[in-house]
Image 1 (cartoon, protein in one colour):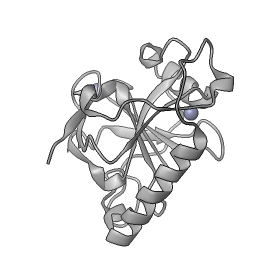
Image 2 (cartoon, rainbow, N blue to C red):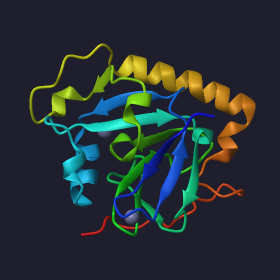
Image 3 (cartoon, rainbow, N blue to C red):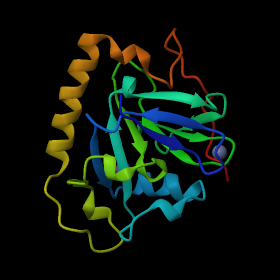
Image 4 (cartoon, rainbow, N blue to C red):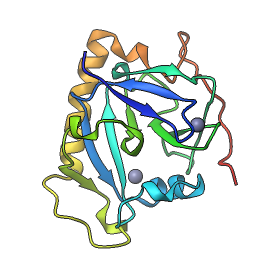
Length: 181
Ligand SMILES: [Zn+2]
Ligand SMILES: [Zn+2]
């Protein structure tokens, strides 16, 4: 299978990711921006403060190395679980605190072969952007619809159980921690 690789800044954590079947979107919300900035990774944001995200089915990504070097945090009480590497504080992915809902969004900035990924057609939360946002084709509706379709497939096939951020018993593989200061 064709794959692209997600690699942290220092190279100790890597995952293979299927470059197709996912949804690429840029999110301009304040939580995504604060997560990157507080981890010292504001260089991955675009000129309007957006985060380039690649949303996939959980079974589309697998650790190659460094699964013991990840932790997660929450920016707000109800926000997603935001994973990052403990070796070099690279923002990694968002999931929910449970794998039952097959939601996974990877930080596209650290993916290799970005031309193999779908082009960016979706932009969301532009109202929170810090600068002019490039013209978009689609918004939240399209993002939700593609997520819903993928989720149904993942639930029906049982693929949701192969979420790399949860162990066989469904427990998160890394600790929940406060964001590093
Ligand atoms: Zn690292
Ligand atoms: Zn966001």
